[in-house]
Length: 161
Image (cartoon, rainbow, N blue to C red; front, side, top):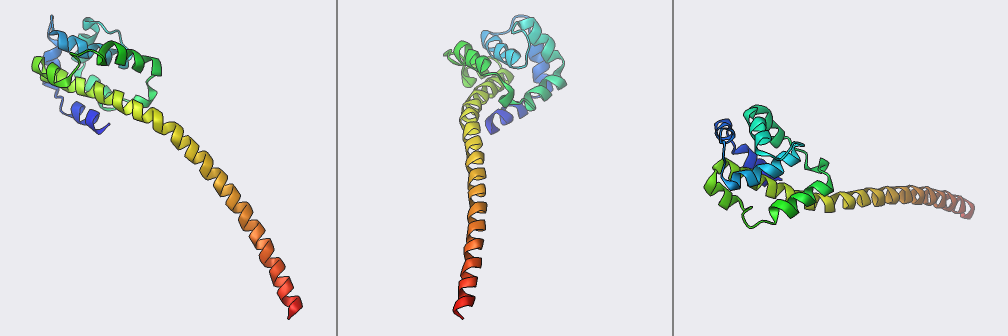
């Protein structure tokens, strides 16, 4: 996720405005903006991307504060299949056409990678919480039983004294 945040942090408003001004952007720019528009809940066409990027501050804020955990699995699978699987969807290649688009490409790739890790970690965290709760309950029962044994041992000690 740090990689995604760093990529977005490198974006500057004038660069985004410049990209938005392109009437006929290079293919790499289109290729990167389509999944970004889908992730942001927009249509994936260039006109929508332009309108979204023209509102630069809200657009950059949305990318910086994006919650990957809220992305539906079906959407991320579609993005992996339709975009990340393409040989052209490589940050370095896209950056040759547009530096900010290259940073956005890095953002999409990093989000996808983070989502895969997140998907594995969340169930494990839930299982850990469940097991920890069961262990705490078992320890409480054990402590109660040990207190009873100590009390019984004290009584036996008093009788033997």
